[in-house]
Length: 98
Image 1: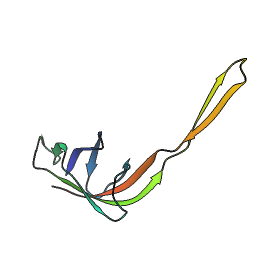
Image 2 (image 1 turned 120 degrees about the vertical axis):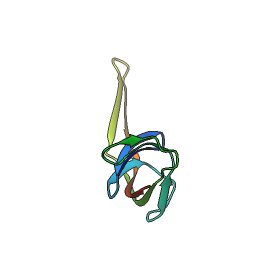
Image 3 (image 1 turned 60 degrees about the vertical axis):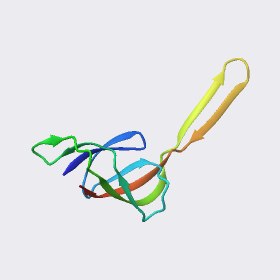
């Protein structure tokens, strides 16, 4: 069974047993998360809008993404700034779509 679920203002199309990276969640590794904002549910043949559907997931770990380097420069003014950023993610495993 597949479902379109909204997690932290982003939409993911998930199936049971799938692992994916979502924006950082406020939980510890090993905790079980329940996402109730399911936008679409599909069982292969038909898709339906089901307000009572829930997606249960297990939080595996928190990680940081690849480094993004930002370089700013103003010519002839001796102004150069280099900044870096690493976005935080949580890896989750979908346990059930019901």
